[in-house]
Every structure is written in C-alpha cells, then in structure tokens.
Image (cartoon, rainbow, N blue to C red):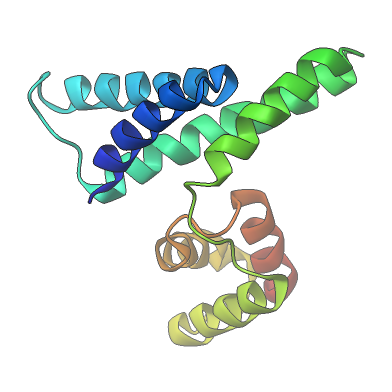
Length: 150
C-alpha cells in the first residue's frame, strides 16, 4: 500500500469512527496531494512516494509556522487547533533523526566533501539535505552544519 492509498484508507476509517478532526486533516492532505499531482501533469497523474512525502512535509511545516505565529499573536486557541492538526500529520512523517544521528550524518557529509570552511556551507547543506531525506528539520540541519564548519 503506497502513501496515497494509506491516506484514502485512513479517511474511510476516520469517517467510520466519526473522528471529525482527523477526517478534516486527512481530507486537506488528500486535497494537497491532488493539487500537487495536477501541477505535476494532470488530474490522472499519481505522485511518487518522494513527491507525496514532500507535500506532507510542506503541510506539516505550514502548521508549525502557524503555531509560532498564533502563539506570538496571543491566540492560544488557534495554536492548539494547529497543534492537533500537526499531531495527525506527524503520524505519517518518517521518524526524525536524533541530535546524535544528525551530528554524525553532518560530520560524515563534511568529511566526504572535504569541506573546511563556511564558504562551503551550500555544498554541505545540499548533500546533507539529500542524505537526511526529510528526516531532519532544515533549521536544525543548518545549525548543525554551521556549528561543524566554524
């Protein structure tokens, strides 16, 4: 069962369980996947796993940014709603790298590329982002690379 089939199946389960919150988030995700497929080549196109996961990460990132904005704006009620949506989306995300795994991966990338200064940060970030494959937040990855190259 691929990612999109899993979403369809989980939508049916949420409908049967009358879980309105989860159902709304899954329907939004399915809509985002469909929009991405249309942009990629038409309504009949099926996204590959990587593209589908990218859409999922994008939606999760939107929720994280919204949470930060709502907390800064003093709207805890809206931040809580976004957090509930984020919990549903995070269930589909790949397991995130721990700080130790992230540091080890960054060190390995740096040694492979032979990078020695911050001037090479772009090259290291590109390679590290590819190697992390969505299992690390961009900010944490950038901070790890920056600290290792300084």
